[in-house]
Image 1 (cartoon, helix red, strand yellow):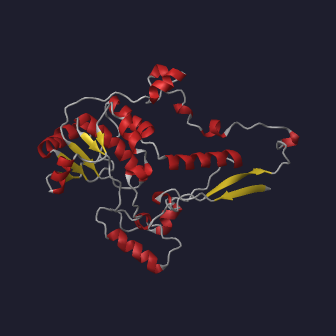
Image 2 (tube, rainbow, N blue to C red; image 1 turned 45 degrees about the vertical axis):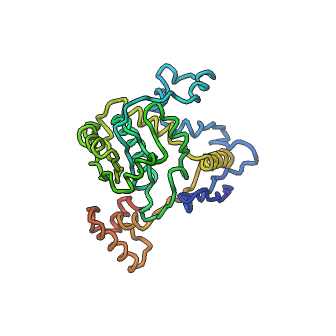
Image 3 (tube, rainbow, N blue to C red; image 1 turned 135 degrees about the vertical axis):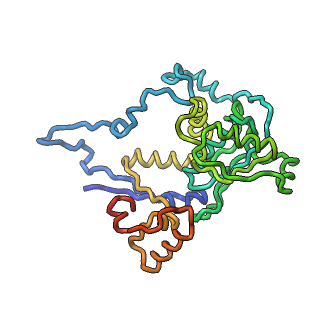
Amino acid sequence: MVVATHKALPPVGPWLMGTWKAAMGGKAATGGKPAGGIGGEKHSSPPVGETWGPRVLKGWPSCLTAPDEAAVRTDHAVEKAAALPPKRIYRNNGYLMVSCNGGLNQMRAAICDMVVIARYLNVTLVVPELDKTSFWNDPSEFQDIFDVEHFITSLRDEVRILRELPPRVKRRVELGMFHSMPPISWSDISYYHNQILPLIRKHKVLHLNRTDARLANNGLPMDIQKLRCRVNYGSLRFTAEIEDLGKRVIRMLRQNGPFLVLHLRYEMDMLAFSGCTQGCSNEEAEELTRMRYAYPWWKEKIIDSDLKRKDGFCP
């Protein structure tokens, strides 16, 4: 017999609506005694973390600490890490505005890339704008999801980040005196030095209107990869409200079991582009097909939905 508990989590912000519906796994009803093995023999199972943990990464130094500090951090080191880093002083080459596109994971990765690009071009980064034009019509701003003050101050030793443009520069943008463009996908840092930096120097303000996968993953200097890592794991901290929700989920998992049922959004665009139309009416399937054909950048047009599902590409 398995006893399962179901607890609904309250909505935290617009982007979380419809995302969290958690069912916490139950415990075997054994009358408070350990379950017996074959012939009544007792078996002790290893903790879930040891079973499923990333063994390959255990013992590796963190990107947030020096290698000799990674194993043990004293109280003094923790206090030192909590202090604000000194500001990096550099000659500002201009201002970089970015409009992220895609889902939350794509936008988070893009923010890491844009910080790196701003740092190595010696420009001032304006807090990124999140995608508001996708199918899910999410109105969230950066500060609705991430701790914007921590984002700015934690990176002050690398790059200058502003919540918005200075008034004089903002007026230039309002008058159309700036340049907007999508950078080339999977570019290395030399592309940004050779092609993007001259545009920033010329126009003073550059707006990158697409950010998904615009910086290569591999073949980059280690310092760039370390900064990417630092932004992702240290500077992009969720708001206190979202952090509290995460802690609540962890408490529920520890109390009720290590399994979580999570309903991720599967929107019309994903249905259209994946071709997974199981459960749809003929009219709905036709509408999804029309949507797929309406976007020329989506290469795959003719999709066999049943075959896709058999191959494991549909939920």
